Length: 407
Image (cartoon, rainbow, N blue to C red; front, side, top):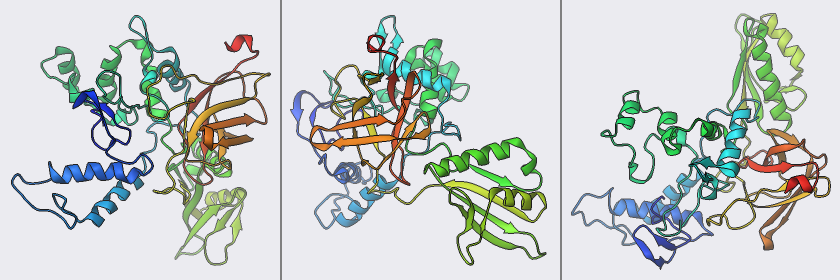
């Protein structure tokens, strides 16, 4: 929370106590306690009629029993973050969004001096705690495309400002509103594409659909989308399923199929299997129609949160520039911090699964990663993915030719 008060597991100063250290009001090892602090505070204040003296079975002000509040906290934490709004169905980040990542986290905005947003809005979730001086939190940029009210207290969203009135009269489109935060400098606009495409845990193929019928099967885009869905399924990024109807008879017969990396297998009954070519031939002949959908695996719940990667050091603290790792021929292992994944996690570079090794040294909060084949030169984006589960944020690393050029 921007003012550093509700559900704070770290303590320190905050907007109500800028000159003193406040103890944590929740347990950093138990996320449910942070959600409970928000729930308890809300039920005792804004969700309670003035003058109402009602208390629950634990003597807490407001509606809901203690058990119901715990259940609500767990439910809130189990609701996944929405998928990235504009991530491609290939799961690859666009060139302009890649530029946005580098501007936001490395090069910064020129005001005219360099101001690097990522120094405070840090990976993994573009957020940090306890800003020096006020104790305010640097709120997350994730989901900015759904927020037209910006900055604490919405202090730019004032209709008496001519510059804001002009945007408000157009419906306050989020991109235009957020451009105020970098004073409309065109150089920094790619940051918005970073916001739209940055990973929130899901493959870009998740929830993508293509329906194949006699007409659509002739369209190249339909088959391109099916290609991407099948590739993501082979990589473990999604579970590809098809719901369709056999049309060999007048009555028709419903069927559910699941792609196993090679063939489409019926999920019940005789469990017949069909190749892609067989299904497309049946579609072209008017004997089958089906909708193919990228689904999620089962390990996506309260006990399986999104994996996270960030530069070496504290997860929450503002600690200066993020130092992203650099690989070259003499340095083929890179270190970072991470959580919520194991050494069996998949490695993803620029949206595609690659072979490599993960070593986790828990006592040092250190994750070591190496690749069987060195990625191509330049800025790359790394993710880890739990088997059949969620993906991490996109994490920057560089590949250079020599140690001298990596400085």
